[in-house]
Image (cartoon, rainbow, N blue to C red; front, side):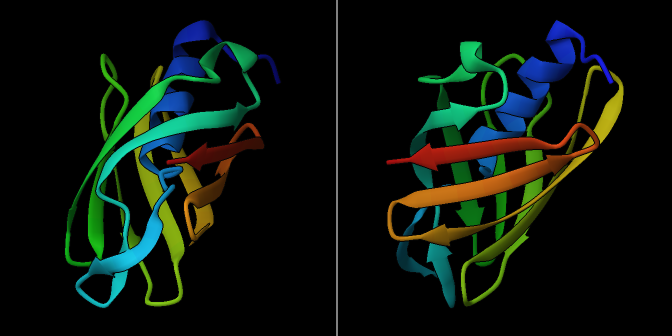
Length: 119
């Protein structure tokens, strides 16, 4: 499946949020604290590597925003597992991943994009 540039940018945005989904083991309720700025360290679209992702958090819910795209929204569990969704290029993406220390790893579908964020 070939992905358009806008879809990939949106996926990056989601990843940044997830990666929506990158966070440290602080406390945001009883969940890891993922609020703040993250950097996309790895993305299936190499042009997105190094891009910032801004995450806001309220308890175990979060929003990831990578600028210029629709933010992704998601939830965290106490053990750092995360799930987020967002629309990019007209396609709804779902990313599942986990936060461990200062690394947030996600796999987003459809498209099978692996994303790693760090802070």
